Image (cartoon, rainbow, N blue to C red):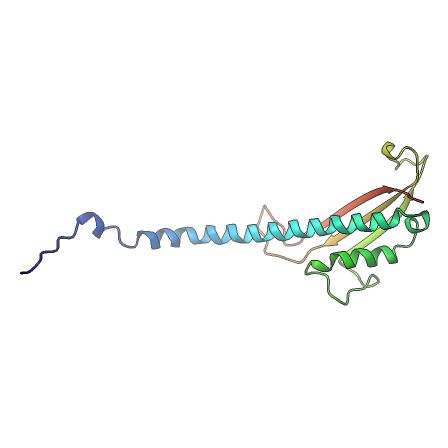
Amino acid sequence: MNKIVVKNARTRGCRGGSALELALMLPWIIFLYIGAFDWGYYAHALISTENAARIVGNWASYNTANASSTGTDACTLAVEELRIVPNISATQTCGSSQVVNVSTALVGPGQTDTNSAYGGDYAAAVSVTYTTLQLIPIPGLLKNQATFYRTVRMRIRN
């Protein structure tokens, strides 16, 4: 006996609907993926810059000689901490650094720069600046390159 197969008219017209939806949504999916990738990279670079500033600030807070130094040792510490980001090479030195800039200063009593939280004691002020790689720009939302600037102040511990 022959079976008669009856196709429903409703299922016949729905073929390829998922492929069409994917084709229409694919540019938005790629756009969101690129945006999430860029934001993740920028967040990672920001956290690394904050860690570098904290470590250099901790080093500079041990005495006034560190806080008022030229910054060569401070820059070496910052570069070592920033080795995790892709823009810093294994052979990066502080003298040729276009990516990382470190400055240390001594902030003391009577200066306009002093924060009252230090109670008039001397403090080390450290600034670390990091410039990221050029990534995929999203007009109006993300630039293709970002510069992160972090400053840390710690009381001098003798």
